[in-house]
Each structure stands twice: as structure tokens, then as C-alpha cells.
Length: 569
Image (cartoon, rainbow, N blue to C red; front, side, top):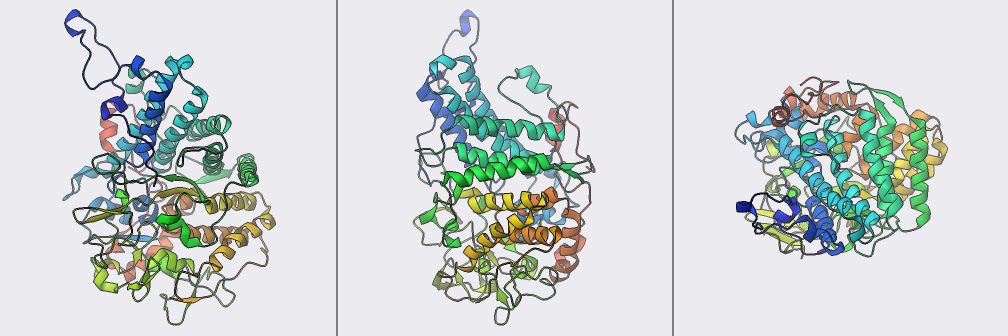
């Protein structure tokens, strides 16, 4: 949590700076600042803070913690809640085929959450663009203008990255466009690769013009910009055709990914926590493994705070929380943590039988990620998960609880809004472990998989040693790889490692799409999970369609025919 500064008013943030002509209209509007008034370093910095704040101005209906689109669609979590009608749009994500451009058509919600997320992303982009326009129009009045532009371009392309991985084809709006150009913009003016180039250019500019570290916690630095640039290039390297099939892996982009991660490592600023648990505890946030995180806050002067509203539905129904039992880990996900006699993943057989805590050995990361009946919640041996009594609809979804985005109910970081518990626990967007795994992935695809081995083992070694807070809740058996005999074996190890290390952090579905294996992975998941959880019996993932969400119907209408809908919708 970082209560950085008091923000400008909403009117200022919208930058309603245009003056009106005519003698009867020559009156300064109240509550609105002119461009001249904000064209100084102090006020531009406040506009930058306002842009940062919008990352945390999200909600469970439009979250920047991507549990609905990253975990539900990947087979790592069930929606949860009180059944399919409880936020039906998220039920649709789990079944795939009900997803349509007009998500507002579904009762009882009658709210288009797909469109709401789109609008929030472009509102964040608008905040950044408005501040960039102020700098562009008064560069001599702004101290360190290149650095300020860098922060804004960094923030802008976080929102663009989110839009890109969700919708693929999006309109690019920057500070140079006139209002008429914005209104006539299309979502196909730039190709898939050209859009990635635009996003990469923003992060590269930031990497070249920001200090290596920042005094103010939570601000972008050259290193966090390099990390986002590496992530962008990694995604871009998997070149897709119009039906989202991976048709080429660009080796030049992968070489750049490796070089960028090398530079980040050599800086010596980031490292892995000794204990995996510290990534998900309030008292250790903004630590050495946090490359960039949404700074959550309560009692910060805003009406509802910028706490963990995306997770406001995800706490269990008991244990001192209150509500609402969403984001329930799947059997498939839990089973993935089982290990063989050597402490390695059961790549082909992990899901043959459900995990039995009395006989099955597991990777310790299971108990950092999932709370289950009879085990401590959030490392408190006096707070034992109650199974069905902690769940909202255990007969539909089961009774597991995802823990990483939640804190202990007695945490000083806790707040409430009615029955909804929220926390000022930061949302990590990039952890150092993720950065290291990008490098390992790039090395494997470059046929340098021997170099990837120690990276993956380093991640596993940390996990192996992260049992101190777990109270021996499980049978732990964690091993390291001795060698990779082939690229295919290394690739399988890397992809499994990402699922375990980054489990339920919102990355999984986008990994599957990047690798071009979403259809086969999800079909394999559904073949068994639909027997365990019959609500999934009608789930159908259509290749060439469900890798991306549709352009929201409202945006199609507002574009006046300028937008082209994604294939299959």
C-alpha cells in the first residue's frame, strides 16, 4: 500500500480544458482548471498520480486483477458465488459459448462487464493522454518532461496491454489525435504486430528516460519498464494469424527478451524472496520481488478507497470474512501440485485422481495458493478452513478457497463495505519470478534449454524451502530437474512451472493463448472437470474464436461501423 499523494478532482483528471467563445460565455467554469493552470511541473505530477490511481480504481466488475478472464477461462478456477445466475457474465466465461458481443443481454445482471472493462481501460488511457498533451503543449514549463512523459506512456501501455490480450484488435488512441480523429478511429488501422510495436515503443521510451529506481514506492522505473518491454516482446514473438493460430515464433524478439532480463538481473535491484509466502502478505509488499504492483489503499481521501475491490467477492463465507465465495480453485488446478517420488510434477497423470492430503505428496506452493478443509488459512494454525461451511455453493463449485489475493481477516489492512471485505494488499502485476520465467521460456524456444534449467530450478528451490509458515499441513516432496533431454521436455517443464508458480494470479489463460494451446488444454480440462462439476457439461471452447473476447457491442455501435468484430462473434 502506498498513499502517495492527494489526487486532483475528477473534473481536472478529465481535463476539460477547452475555453468557450462569445461575450456571454466568457466566464471561467467552476471546478475546472485551464490548460495554463496545470502547465507546470507540480500540477503535471498530480496528473501523473491521477493516472497511476486509475490502475487501482478497478472493481470486481472490471478488475485489473484478472481472476475472471485469466483464471476462470483457463480451468484453474470456478466462478463460485451462489450459482450460475450470480454474475452470469462470469459464468459465461467458464462455459465460453455464451460469450457474445452484447453481454448486457443476460439477466439478472443486465450489465455488460466486457464493455465496462473496455471503457475503464480507455478511461485510464485518456488520463495519460490528457497529461501527455499538457506536456507537449508546454514542454519548457515542465521540469524533467521526458521522465514525466515516460511515466505516462508506461501507465498508458499497461492499459493497452490489457486491452490487447483480451481483444487482440483495438483502436490506438494517443495524445496527438484530434477529437475527430478519435471518433473516426478503427480497430484495424494497425495490424496485430503493429499494435504490439506501439505498446513496446511506450515501454522502451520509459526504459530509456526513467531512473533505474524511484524514490517514491510504486512509480515506474527504467527497470520496471524494461520488464514490461520484455513481456510485450515475449507475447509479440508468438505471431498469430487471423484465427489466432501461432504461425511463427520470432527468434529476434526472443533474443531481446533474454537481453532485457539480463539487464534487469545485472542491476541487482530485484531478487526472489526467501519464502514464497512473502509475495502475498501485506507486511512484505513492495519488497525485493515486486517489479510493479498496483498500490492499494484505504482511507486515502477517495470515497471508497482503492483497496482490493477486484477481490471483494472472493473471501469465504465464514472464518470472520462475510462474503461471497467466488474464485474457487478447480480440482484440476489442485491436482497439478501433486508430485512423484522425485518431487517432480506428474505431467501426464496428475489429474487421473483427485488429491488426497493423507497420501499424496505435493509442491508446497499448493498451501500458499489454495486453502482447503482441515488446513490453516493464511498461515494461521488457529484459523482452520471449514470445508463446506466456508463455501457459498459447495455442491456446484466445491469448497476450496483461493488465498493469494486475500489477507487474514484480522489484518490491519482490512476494510469493509457492507458484507464485502477489501484489503489494502497490493496487486502484483509483475513479480521477479515471472521475469525469470520469461527468460527461461525465451531460452527454450531459442533451443538453449540447458540455460533454462538452472532458472527453473532456482524457482523450484525457493518453493522447496518455503514451508516454514505452512505448519506441516501437507506431505511435501519437492525436487529439482537434473537435465532436459529435449526442447519438448524443457517446454513442458516451463509451462507447468508457470502454472504452479503463478497460480491464480491471472496469467494462465493468456499463457495458453500465447503458446497456441488453449483449445487442447481446455478440452482436456473439461473432459474430466465436467464430470466432477456438472455445471460445465455445456462448456464448449471454439478454436479461432474464444481465444479473445468480442469487441463490446456498445463500442461497435458507437464506432458507427468503423470497428470490425473479432472472428466467430
